Length: 122
Image 1 (cartoon, helix red, strand yellow):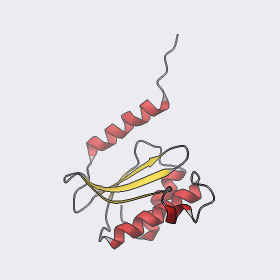
Image 2: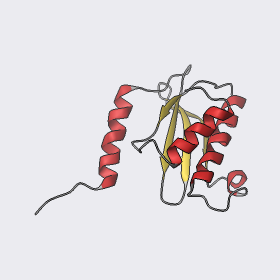
Image 3: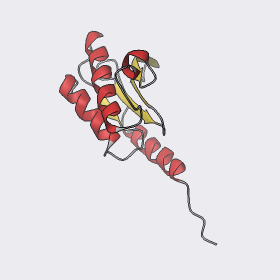
């Protein structure tokens, strides 16, 4: 019988490979993205200090109020603009993008493009 590895285990392995290549610093923190079937989450993290500097998700009331659905490309784009605005308010303009092992297409790409358009550099 053929044993096939599940997609979530493959994603976690990809994420660990990505995380071994870079980490967030105080000068250039890491923009970590996670998506579930219903929501998306984004955090800007300083890995050296172990602090989350900025966070946003589609569960936040200010983000959720503007959205009809929280699991589509439009929601991801809205989340990208919100996280970028919060980061710029804190004085963060350059980040390292951590796609979390997800393929850079669809929702992940929409979030990244919206964050770039809102002023984040990565």
